[in-house]
Image (cartoon, rainbow, N blue to C red):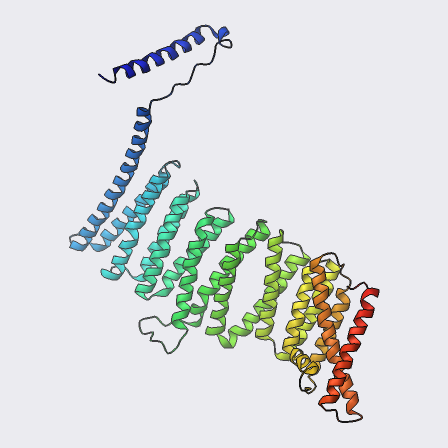
Length: 508
């Protein structure tokens, strides 16, 4: 009875609103002159009933999921009792898990909680079932378990593709990653589950090229990298007890890391070159990790043939990247250009030091320095000119000129170096002369001119000191005081020459 006045007030308000609407329908000409009816406001009791309805739907979803788990336990009990053929029970259990996955894909998109719960139920049914059937009951071999896991993964991606169901893909990829890694370690059969993880990486990157499910890539990449590292860690040491592991050929040891590198390398190339998207921090880091894994596998498991092939591959890939970035201009965006240019330098240096003999190494680096500097001037690309500086420093180190310079200007005077060291000094002076054509328009160009001048002046100093010492040997045998005087004269002469030429050549 206490609520009767409130009820009567609500009824009176609704009757007045209905009368206003009927009057507007009977006299439409007066609609513009009449004020708009106030919107009906539901009392708090109705809002509470709506939230209660949503809570009821949530509890209903959770209740169905619990029933689904109870059904899985029932199937497990039937299979364990022996009253039913085990293979038939396995087939029924797999179909039961896939049915929950299909149900999750048929849920309306707005009901994301239900889709996530049902797909999680499917994963919680399948993953423990594969564990017990493989390790406890010995019904499935590791290969068959990996095939079933791959089937579950492909089914989830296929069902989620049409309506872009992100939650299903997250659950499926996470469950597959955890199940594959745990079964890989527990069964000690690495190849089948590595194949599953590589398949998951391929599907993830294929979806990323269509700009789908980008967030799950981090989990997928981590799982694939971890599995490849586990394989290399186990088989890297010949004195380790590998009685429980299969004997793998060199090709089987190399395949996972190389496949991982190609999956992520091709994905990055497609996204940045063909699709024109900006490379992300994840893609940069993952490409580097995959490359390092492939490099370690090639050099460690096939040292006789892997190192030369790996070095040749690095040099070839560096040339391709250089041509793509600076010649064909196939990469757009400042970040993409910086990343690809940095990779080009690193690959060329790595390939040169891995597969070239010392003489060819210094010569090729010096030639690359001249080519990069001249290309930077002709193409107006300051980045290429900086690459020339990097190659000059590497050539000075590889030829021994860097060590000779440090001893020529300080300490005991060294013996004359090989001819390739003098060629490196000449390359440094030539690169400075070529790079002088770059306009001095900002701090980057000023930094380039300063570093290039430092290399050229250092080379000139070593050449002058060596020439003066050689001329002195034609008259007397120079000792430490004589060499000190020659070094002082060289330093003073270079200082005066730089001070005089700098203002006149506009080289601050």
